[in-house]
Length: 330
Image (cartoon, rainbow, N blue to C red; front, side, top):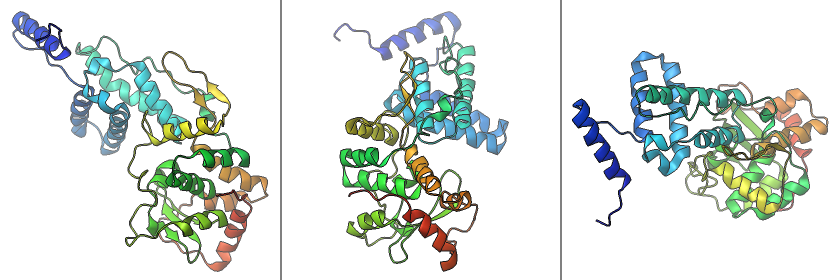
């Protein structure tokens, strides 16, 4: 009505022209429609394990794109793919896993290019993670940095999430979705199944973490989340939890070594991220002389039994190891 040609109307006109010339209309896809359609075709063509890997990548990428996933397929850029990959890396995913995610995305985008829906493959322009970039998130925080981050945290729940990661070594996804059923204040234990490895983890409660948890109002339902405002949120993407933590670090003026400077296609990759809390947990104990065997038990063991019970004798060295981690001010 105002004389402007909207994207939708432009598509309709192009489709009408193509239909006149070729006898059939041109099909337009949103990024989500195309990726879901392609994935549907892989259900029978590939083994179930391969299909599940593809589905995980597609689901994660669509979530990371946010509203842009509903827009035309040709609007996806190499920068979108690289942002997704970098966020996955910062969330603690192994570099090889992140590289595979990019390779997975190249396949449906290549099909779209061959069918004339794209002029280029946005995932093709994204290079694989280098050995140097593998160090992303592997830095460690010192106590002064941690104290500054806690002070800069925007809410009580974020402070709790940071404390929980630092004193248990839990990954971001596990921390955000931790439930009260994992907290045993009587025996001073945190027990949960790690989402990434499916391993059962039991960690004695550090006195600082215990002090924080005791102050929280206990819910009626043990299945309630410890941090409701963080639960069920994606970790990657511009509005994800990884980026939220990066903003807390910026506010706290905590900077790690820059692994890669921002370029036209991607953002700066830092040696410090939320995953560094896990590395700090491990590093502080190692520097305090805690054996690798004990540290491995605390960062995840291979027990398939969720509620594996340690005997008092087995718990003692674990409690002693946790006690070696420095206390911070709440």
